[in-house]
Image (cartoon, rainbow, N blue to C red; front, side, top):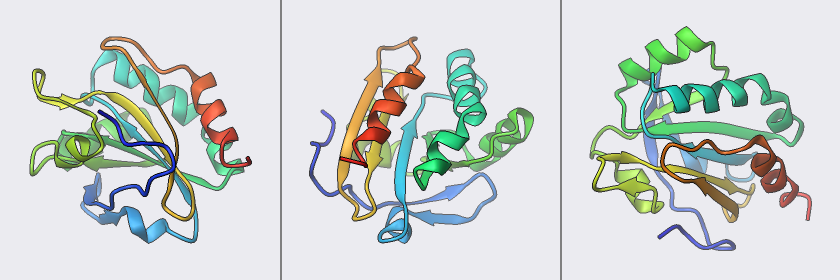
Length: 154
């Protein structure tokens, strides 16, 4: 079960791929945030999805939105993958407790042991404005991101 639109987004603190602490609430009052949960670094569908986001970062920048990718991978795996693919956004390690943030957002698959493909868009005040997901093995289309970003202008 995912969180409801119009409700406050649960705060969290995770390490990014460089070992720096990132707290969701640090963006409150400053920027909107797009949280992109994904199953695993180096996997085909995840690489395709995040490369598409990398290639379209301007659409997030234009709306003053910070893009954060979150998976259960370690910060070391995320750093190697991020450098290999040239991602220009932070990748956060939901490594320990294993999938804790994904569980809180309703994005954790107990059967598989990793996050599902859920995206949550949070406004500057920390309120969830949009969310969408893809079925296992499927990719989220860029058009869903564009539609979610439109909710910030409404």
